[in-house]
Amino acid sequence: MEVFGAATAELERLAADLGEPPYRGRQIAGWLYRKNAGNFSAMTDLPAEFRRKLEAASTLFRARTLARSQSADGTTKFLLELSDGQRIESALIPYTDRVTVCVSTQVGCAADCSFCATAAAGLTRNLSGGEIVDQVLTLQGHAGERVTNVVFMGMGEPLLNYDEVIKSVRLINSEVGIAMRKMTISTVGITPRIRKLQSENLQLTLAISLHAPDDDLRRRLIPLAQRYPLNDLIAACRAYAEATGRRVTYEYLLLAAVNDSLTHARKLVGLIKGSLANVNLIPYNTVFGKDYKRPQAGVVKAFRSVLQDAGIETTERFERGHAVSAACGQLSAGAGSGVG
Ligand code: SAH
Image 1 (cartoon, rainbow, N blue to C red):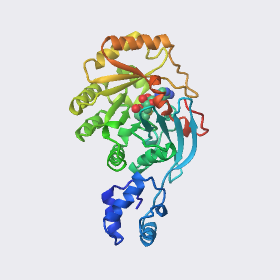
Image 2: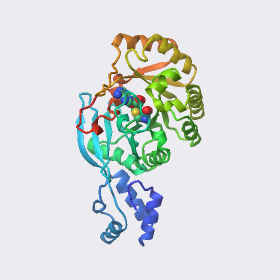
Image 3: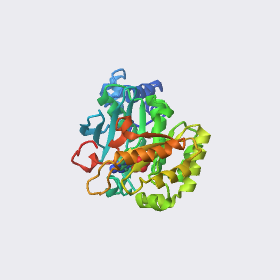
Image 4: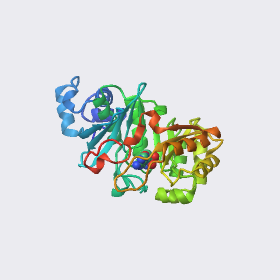
């Protein structure tokens, strides 16, 4: 079996199967998730004989870092290679008061968003829970300090890899020690899965990539959204917020002359007003071969004022240190085209 991604209970069973007491499994978990060990020989308090048995009976794979590139604001994008040679990207975003890692959940993506660099190649495969946790710890190793927050905003659609994403969330929580409230799942809005997520009773933050205030425009930007009409999606989000007490974040990518008018802003207000929510306006990150543009600063300001005047808390992504501009598939395209 692959040990990275296994929970403590599974590692206790593995130890027992190899003729050792269960606490040996807890030691392995400590090495994997708290001491960030990359191989069995690093686990120096395990008997040498047991380590040899472990090596024979199991594998310990950690992603290889192929490239990294740092932007002026300190965000570092990583290109990682998985055991089967597939490549993904992750980002490390240091703030003054926290260290955030942005993880991928799939190799590629099936959502086909018209503005996104990941869309072109389609979906290759889901990541395993272990491969998601690996990104957090690999980047923590590079950072040299503890990761405090995890955002599921890299390549892929988290709610279309539901089971492994939830598995990773539980591991990151119980094994790595990051609180549920410090994790954010960003989705194009797979409504039935939002309802399912609510039923798990976790304290995760939910972020919805809204990007349009009506179904017609939305399905042009996010073809997958066709199957999940806005009314129903927003109802599920309101229910999630009420049940968990967690404010839902609506992400709104501003594209010049596409979705940035005052009419769009007013429609957006109509859609989400009165719910436990805030809006995060995202400046478009240029993607080669797509002719979308960022709106002028004045247009962004006017859009934002409409939301704020309606009492909706609104932030702009660049104010938070370019947060996840690293989240749009550019590095994995190959050449390390730099951080947006
Ligand atoms: N599939 C999930 C998570 C990955 S994308 C989702 O859609 O939410 C993370 C965020 O980056 C989404 O809000 C996405 O719409 C946004 N994004 C994609 N391409 C972008 C670009 N070129 N510029 C800015 N944001 C982009």
